[in-house]
Image (cartoon, one colour):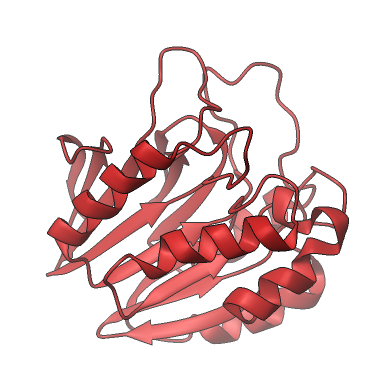
Length: 242
């Protein structure tokens, strides 16, 4: 069985980051001891160097060798995408990891909140998914509207083309964030999983800080919503293949 912890929207900053919640998140994730940690953007609030340094300290304290990290729209403010590369490496990456391939892409644009993957990446994405592995696609922006988030905005301008591409590549799981509301959609045979904010005060409606735990066990897929203290709620329990 492979366990993936999916975190998003840390928003390291003096205004929004909750250090006590972050401590509980780090502890509960380390107790899970996941095989892979995926962080889908908005590590910072304003894309500044001190905020990236704080975000890296948080992420570095998570005990997991395999981490896939992509930037969000807040990380690309103030030319922050350059700091992202300094602290976390390439903004687009492919990670084959013991039967699971995770492809992470930068869906942000400098100083614009709207998402955009871009045709220039489509061939690379398709090539990266030429595998029999369980296929995971990670980006910051939500590809499908999320309930309880108000007027729809900032969805990637090419979300339709991206969804068609992912379907053609037989992607199993899409991980995203941005809207701060946890939700799961099933689109054909693909699950699209949105994460809430892990440890910021930017929560919406009746939600709270949380993250996702995904368990992949042969044909079975289980998705849990996890509170900072480690309490788990089973959200999806499906067999992915006969």
